[in-house]
Length: 313
Image 1 (tube, rainbow, N blue to C red):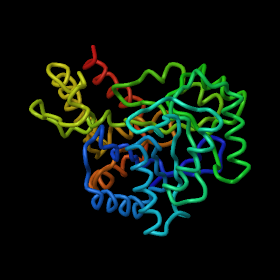
Image 2 (image 1 turned 90 degrees about the vertical axis):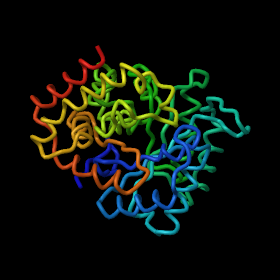
Image 3 (image 1 turned 180 degrees about the vertical axis):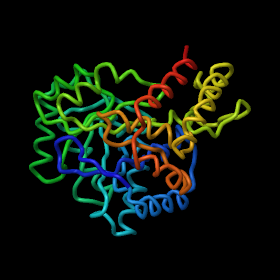
């Protein structure tokens, strides 16, 4: 496994990050926790040391499940844990954006309890909250760091202007953006800002919710949140699958599967530190880690990007 320094922090993370969004039954349905725990064991054995979760994933379920695994395996010192705050879900069946001082402090304590740890390596703002002044956010983060409960701070889903604004009030270690061959919007502004300010990048939806794995056919149907997405229906779905299948010669040239090619494509961008991959079972992590062993030549990176771009036209 290859590793990289995350931004200006002292965190040295694996270039593949184990993602936990799948432990959100509302979005993904129920998953087999035994298989998921086995996948975590395998990931650790393969050198994956970075795990990304959020308080909102399953309204605490993902953090609690991860905390139980950490406690049972007694491996807290071997992994770097990233989690997030933003969605206030203290009232059942209701979510409200909240990055107020009191909520950040309160929710960090709740995350620590669920994760069964006394510190969080990377604490991320999950999304932009226009109603809370940056000074208030910074005050909460400063307190948490002073108390030793959080080591470094990151942001997720923020645009370049929001990153620059927050940077005036506290050090941003990382950005977690949507980035893959189908979703390249952050290449224009956000990734250049990260390069300029030495902000690490951990990409989410690296495989576009499975579209870039090469495992689906036009007959595939979905019972989770993807069933309502235009990308997973009709002619759009078929067009994307045709483009993904057309990536096969590039993948074979480098001894990769299509899914590995999609991850390596993301990791080739100089701003990207690590690629988050959603994992439900051991095969998902076993079959992807080789993607981190190298980067793509520029010619093949652009060729793959062009093939997928035509699917969106």
